[in-house]
Length: 424
Image 1 (cartoon, rainbow, N blue to C red):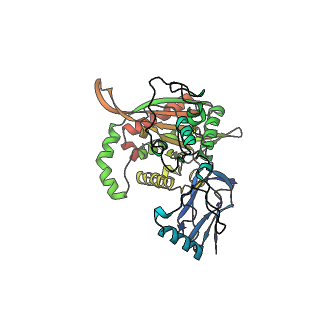
Image 2: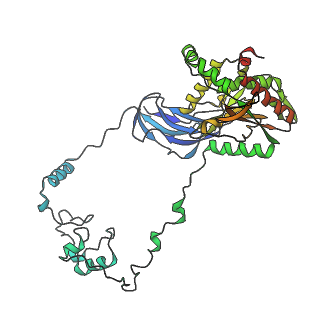
Image 3: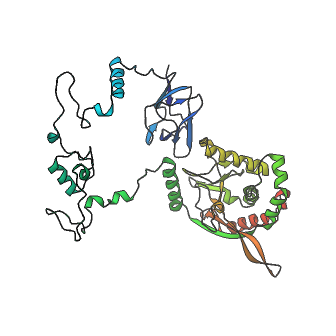
């Protein structure tokens, strides 16, 4: 009994998906619950597992759009029996293998003697020249004159002559192109050969649409500040071993920033709001989106009720999302409902950038690379690990004073991390 592989539903509003990749080849044996293909929608990338074990038959190749519920492959319970070899086939193969090389008749590939009719092979002089053998014009003319088959032996040695000597000055033959002339146009690569055309995936299309909409439909503005990270680094260095031992997860910088943003959003609620149908919608909860880069594009899974999460809760939730993204297990529900976003371009080496709003949200915080720089502390020049931070916000809702206040509150808590634990 065959098992159909169909495109699963990934959300009420999603009617089609992009069949991005088959993880198995046609005819491969697959096990139950083993991933067999990858689909993409405008929001997520998802692996589809086999509902049972057997041999895979691919009905729809990768690289096209498919409807939700469409059958794209089948899994048979067992392999189909291979067609048995006939006695004539076995005999022919055995005779051909047993015949010595010298006893085999001279044949041009693709020209056979008709069995049982007495038809002989085509005479040597009547055989057409092989056009798939690379020869220069002069050698091809020589082969034609001497009635030689280029497939049987190199032309010069078959003729019993040495290769023709190269003339000191190249001359055109029979109106042909001389050796000094440029190569024929067929050797010059076409412009199309110098480029690669790759269709945009649904996720990449959706990212492009959202980014363009954010630039066109919001009054986006960005303000900057810098944070002295030496206290956070000291705290992390001092406690990371014990933290990992206690919670079975590493302590990163992102949990410090998420906690700092939660407190800043509570103080400046306009940045946690958005516009809908002429109204400003304020959120009492802080659902923080964390931008995560993947091979197929940037996705922003959401930490729901971040105000209730501990450092360990935040680090575990982020690690779980990273694992889901790596194994194409992220669900649409993981991406919905965010009220504010944090993006860390510093992991890629970015020193300063302007993040684009993740609409309909009104604010996004951009983290950047930690870099040692000379700064003035207590009237002295010291070397400190500094990080630039950028807040992009929708100026229709958020005033400049509120944006600057938000960044100052984030800066104050990160430069005195004990305030994150005391909630002051």
